[in-house]
Length: 313
Image (cartoon, rainbow, N blue to C red; front, side, top):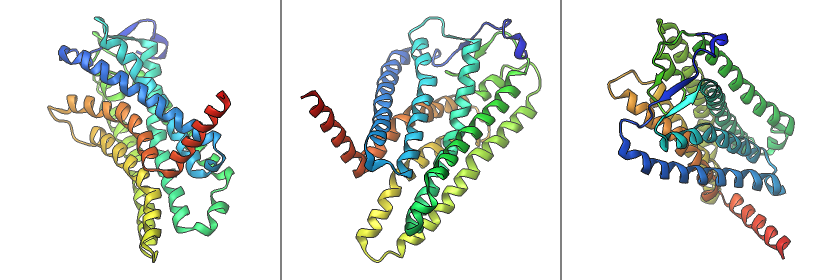
């Protein structure tokens, strides 16, 4: 199959959780609630960060990008999954599969890079506080965010093209709940060793390199914080980084366990469960982590709510 052959394949069957039908209704309820919480939480962060002038800083600019990305991430996955959980025929159209694959790859790669950019922002804020506003000026912030999105887009174009050019064998049954590169490679009628090697290379580039930059940034941050004399100052410095560290641990830990572990008999179910976590649960937890641990966001949210009530009166 190639790009001009999309009329031949009309749809794919997504097995998802069909081997455990007793799980489908509980999962539908859980995913629906998670989706609602994700939409509300991330929209709240975007609105608060944009409408409250006190949050017009590089840190919240990047957090807004992360929240927008998480909104798109979960919307790319959950609606189709909810439909299939309620349907007898669990299918996705060919064009829908291509779109889901492309968007999923864009957002995944972009999020890795955004997390690395956010760690750089925290490094400058703590290690170069007097030069923070000079270094992290608006133009640089826009360039860093744009570079993350453009790189994610380029990565998706490359991997999507390589994957969709492979000839696929009938029946077109994907043993997953979404269209993902590893799941589509299993449908190929030809040897996919080269594609798997390229996928592994991309995984290393977008997992380990940003993670290494994050670890280096936090090594300098820890050293700088330990030099602070007052306990209150150290606590405040660590507090600004705590939320980001938790999000990094959740996202990288789950993603690495999918793509960088060797195949095993349980890798199929492990891949589904971990994909669920970083595609659905992590986007739901991110706004909770940043709001519950961040005094500035909570105060900004209270001010926004107060303004809304005043307007209504």
